[in-house]
Image (cartoon, rainbow, N blue to C red):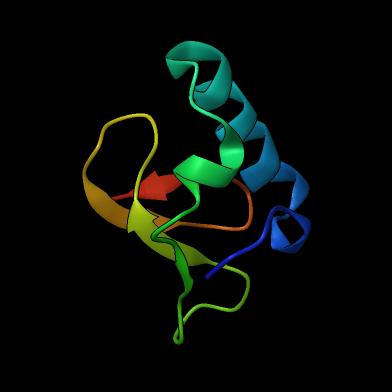
Length: 64
């Protein structure tokens, strides 16, 4: 499980935006995220802005 302290500034910004839009705390949005074993710094799980499973790069850019 990813902790808030593990996020890069770009990822943190994306989760903060989602927290403001949904009213759900970042800790809840991070519940199913895991580190991506193939992309350093990337995480994968249910993306907070669209609800689809995907990858979030260290920059905060997302891919489904």
